[in-house]
Length: 562
Image (cartoon, rainbow, N blue to C red; front, top):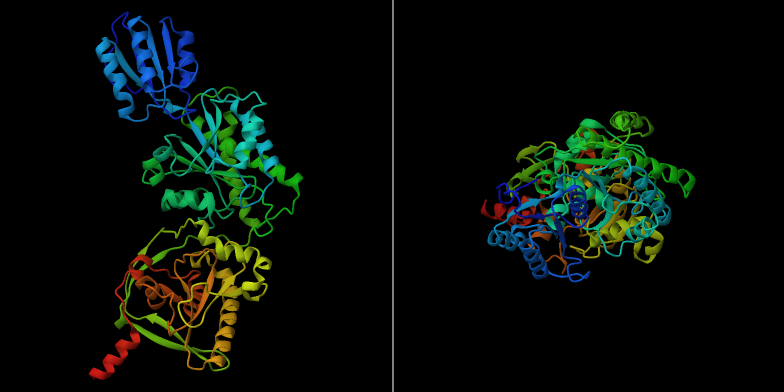
């Protein structure tokens, strides 16, 4: 109990208890339990029913509380009261009545907030998923007297939330132990007032920040501490399993949202564009999804047990089983060929004087410019991943790769490995994109040694198109490369002429994105991947904000001055 004004009430004096917590946090349950066992006369004042059974406002609550205190009855104020301003008038009220005010916040109820597993990117049937969620929630909620589960989605129009709420209505499930919530899982307390200890992450099998959606959002919000904590426990996870990652106190999710643990869980995949697709085998898929929720809830149970909350029933095996899941997850690496490693970024402060151009030739003798920095001041950021949450507008290239048949009129070429299209906002006379068709390669940070053959194929495709453009205009010079941190999701190679004559080249950022080390040449990327297993990535913000410099003008001036 958190005491707003500390003073023990005198015998016989009425007490006013101000409950503070988000809807569904257990305030009403707390009131009912106290009233049931107390010999003191109590009145519960709930803002939702204060107006003769109908919703009222703060003024109604204050009026009812005043009357009850004058009658010598103790009072529960059952409303959110999340900030001091909302509580201040009730504090003044009891002061004038000669009573005492205590604040009770039900934040000590262990809470797991989880998204629907597999129904978004993995395209699992919503109806079947809702049945499994309700089944597993009903099974788990009876095991603990004082814990709650919260299903979350970001939209009030969420189909899965509607289905689950409808199915729960026909079950004997305590709404204080399970409810749904609309909001951002990474800002539950700071924006929604819902304090929780544990959140679930709908992870990929590699347990890395790649992709988008909930996984990318949670890794981004938690900072590099989450990836480090995860990799200390487990390297990969097979569908149907879960792994608990304790959040270090330095994580922003810990300090800002009071989240102490993240439970990674991998569900079944029905999306043919994603790994381990079950091809609509729902017998197998439902079994895996049931296992996934069982693993998730048992992982939560192990956390609750370790934090000494007292469960009802026999749960001594839960912690042991959760630890076994992590061991099994380590073994699951045998089912996969490669494990994604953490991407590390370098900070490179480039200058025009430190930059030279080198030429490379293909078999036909065509020359392409390429850049490399000779003298750079670099400092390495260890344990720093490039994490990114992709907005809807940034998904356009990804959608083209996923469904090229829908965009045939816009594509210049389609192959098994790549598709080619004109840049929608070209920054030069000729500017095309070569998009990788491999799922899971969102940007250069995702590329590993196993993708080297794909990069070579993309490079060859780019050279072919550059040659075609040169046959049309021999005066053009081309450069092939990648942006270190692209604005659009899906790995893509730029093939761009170096004239930069375009109405779409509008600002310094556009220029610097192709004329600083932010633009990583294709041949350099392949060399680095071949030797180091990853590309060297620079500090994009500093590079994009550099002063404007034109190497061609500098060379001309140096020659003239000499």
